[in-house]
Amino acid sequence: MSSRSIERGTDWLSKGGVRPTRQRVALASLLVGDGKNRHVTAESLFAAAQTTGEQVSLATVYNTLRAFCDAGLMQEVTVDGARSYFDTNTHDHPHFFWEDDGRLTDAPAHELEIARIPAPPEGAEISSVNVVIKLRRT
Image 1 (cartoon, rainbow, N blue to C red):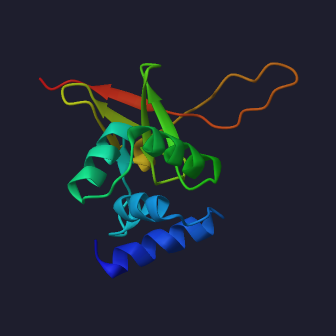
Image 2 (cartoon, rainbow, N blue to C red):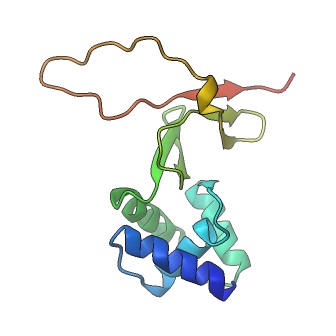
């Protein structure tokens, strides 16, 4: 891992007020070290960490992703109610889910039009709207 990616990862953690432990810095560097946004599963981030030689358990990856979400650094996108993806782009935007290979990508937000959404029940407010468009190759 380059010193620039480690610096980016450390800065990212600082923005969220997350204590920069060695493992958190390593995972953050994998997520944002090149300055690009990522969609990962805990398993894919665990595999990426293993390829760099980082000694981290899958449970630690899950806990770290949860901490990053709690700090507002990432958002969790649930597909099919069972599979979770973690997105470093925290702005509201739609996603494409590629069913053939289980991949999540950003969809063009400027092309999405939502004319109306239902009013929330009394005593509740809408905190977010997630749009996942499932795709299958033809």
